[in-house]
Amino acid sequence: MKKIAIVGTGYVGLVTGVALSDIGHDVTCVDIDETKVAKMNQGKSPIYEPGLSELMTKNIEKGNLHFTTDHSIAFQNAAAIYIAVGTPERADGSANLDFVQQVARDIAANVSNQGAVVVTKSTVPVGTNKLVKHWITEALDRDITIEVVSNPEFLREGSAVYDTYNGDRIVIGAESEEAAELIEAINKPFGVPVFRTDIESAEMIKYASNAFLAAKISFINEIGTICGKLGANIEDVAAGMGMDKRIGDKFLNAGIGYGGSCFPKDTKALIQIAGGVNHKFDLLESVINVNNKQQQLPLDIAHMVVRGGLEGKKVAMLGLAFKPNTDDMRESASIVLAHKLADLGANITAFDPIAMDNAKRLLPESVHYVASTEEALQDADVAFIVTEWDEFKDLPLTVFEQKMKQPIVIDGRNCYPLSYVETANIDYYSIGRPSVIRAGKSNQPAN
Ligand code: UDX
Image 1 (cartoon, helix red, strand yellow):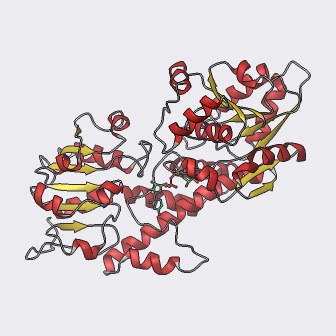
Image 2 (cartoon, rainbow, N blue to C red):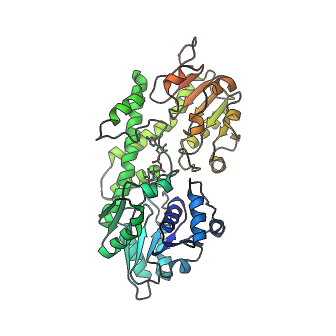
């Protein structure tokens, strides 16, 4: 059992801290937000993440998990100090390291353990870990040595707790063999394979992984657009491609693009990192451009199929979060869509099972929020499915028929098999698949 401090209690820090306490370590999470710390001390998670609150309560009761605003308490005798603060995007797309630098200062002021290992979980540009070491040692006024380790996270929101115990790999980048050994030993109970490398490579693994996954999504979305024009079905195409083990069947779901706290930010940051060494990352720039186009798609379809335009029309938005099982709205396709629809004078009624509170801060004020799918669809002229929550996927299509004024459904996440849609009396447009139009209605564009 090791004494561990975690700085920052966002998605990454909190999940990491709670999971490390659950495998038997004595973990203190530190955050500057007093209200949040008070809440977490009662076992209440400030974020929605399946299974997290239960694990928090269990480990607080066991005495393994503590929360404080005081760095000196958290760092007292800590063998490892994890940096898990945000690295938001600057205007030019590069990562803002101000929070990381502040933590480095706080570590210098409060670290008490000789040889303490500072572990960077935050996604930081290549070279940052060495910079962190420099910032700390420069500010240290006592005879204490520290080591740094890059240990990027690969957790998906919505399944972060599951991923912690079932990850594909734990990457440990270190200069010091001893420091790497310590972090490997800390993580051993998770039973996840460990990959050890140098610090810079570990930092790059995180960016390269996210950029590759984003590229996979933009690639399948481009193929989807072409399929849509040629009458092919992207789902079958992706399934056929995915059977090739070299390609793999994951991350081949066409839709209205990726969002969230990582892909949009990390792809832009990697372009900046490449630019810093005079390399123009053409491929990644295209990945981002394709994603921007993809977020516009539902509106392009609506322009073609909603007769008389969208002004004054009742529009239902089903799903607001950037993906299911999270309340995270960051970079969600719903933001682009809602603002464009509001600008066009549409009356938007929105429903999301979890993300509505967060959505209120980001969507236009005119959006009307309701408590159920049925209410959102009532008398609507067109419905947009933005997030593939199970409750939308499980919805009988008769609900669209019965509730909507005109059953025009634009499904940005390909929620229903076309064979099922064909049994319903709706006009259905999805991504990269043939449209299904009500019998007797022509499939001509509206304008
Ligand atoms: C991602 C990475 O998966 C994780 O390893 C990293 O550490 C953080 O970023 P996350 O942002 O939580 O995790 O979500 P993820 O499940 O990867 O999905 C990201 C976005 O891609 C979502 O908007 C999702 O809808 C979209 N996506 C995903 C697709 O459009 N198609 C797919 O096939 C897969």
